[in-house]
Amino acid sequence: MATGKVAQLRQKADRFMQLGMQAVTDKLFPAPSGDKHDYVSLSKYFWPNPKTSDGLPYVLLDGETNPENRQYDASRLGSMIEAVKPKNGD
Image 1 (cartoon, rainbow, N blue to C red):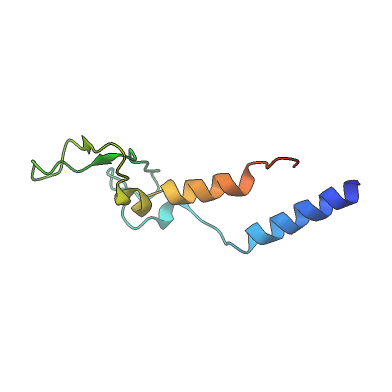
Image 2 (cartoon, rainbow, N blue to C red):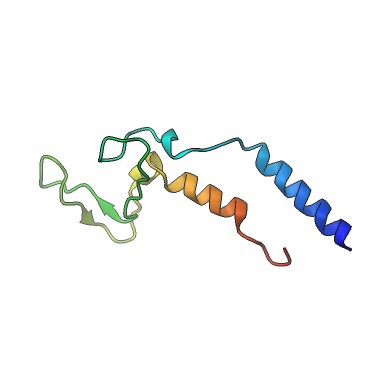
């Protein structure tokens, strides 16, 4: 029985190895600090303020996901979580 679990784990690991490496520096834009090494997580439902020239402070648009999230680290974090979290029976 352990052999079946080992084979399943190896198969899962092989699939994830094909995805390639992802790094916090892969984002399209640097963090607000100016350093691409800094992790950036935006609030999902906050958008640039249309009433100000610099968009600050961000305003809540409840239920509307800001697409800027994908430009930073949220998608890579989600992929990593999916790759390492145990599933039922693992």
